[in-house]
Length: 256
Ligand SMILES: [Zn+2]
Image (cartoon, rainbow, N blue to C red; front, top):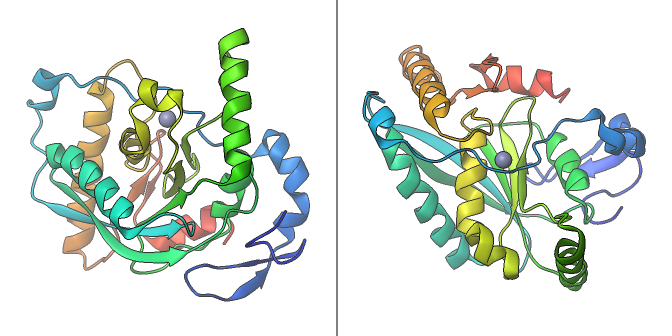
């Protein structure tokens, strides 16, 4: 454990810069055993244009995204990623807007560790979602080689390119710089962000996006109502349709 975890009982909130104590960190080995639920990503589904075009997704809505970036992730890369995501979300009249970019360091090399770390951060204005952009270190390169060998011989993919929390769908990470063979298969970091972006809108995995369209429509209606009520938060929703209309609800759910 290193980086943002200053000790076994504390962490630094990258947005406020404040160090906090958190007893959950002491439980990390237990949590890593599977108590926390994060998606192991496969596919969110293929577009079915005829189904999507049946739905009126309403007026434009902005979703403010706070990025955490490791030091080798450049402004240009963030811009390119955001353009790709925004292009996809044009289908739904949702504008992912870069609200904050904060320097950050992952707490470990396993996806589960990164996921754990992200869950510790309270959601504060102006953030509607938190997306961590993981860079590339020498350890990552070794992991990639090992992962490729494993994939070639036993067909098991060790490396996960991104994940979103299943409790609130408000935060996630992507490997934003990987350039391995898997990139050719999956389409690279932009595709990963688009995929995780669907989870951030409450969609799960499926063969097609048909159910996801309905979920986004429901979320957009909730967002429009929340805005009329004076809220500055773009609501969050889980795959089970647990709706979060306030950041406080998200923070309560995650114990922040
Ligand atoms: Zn996924």
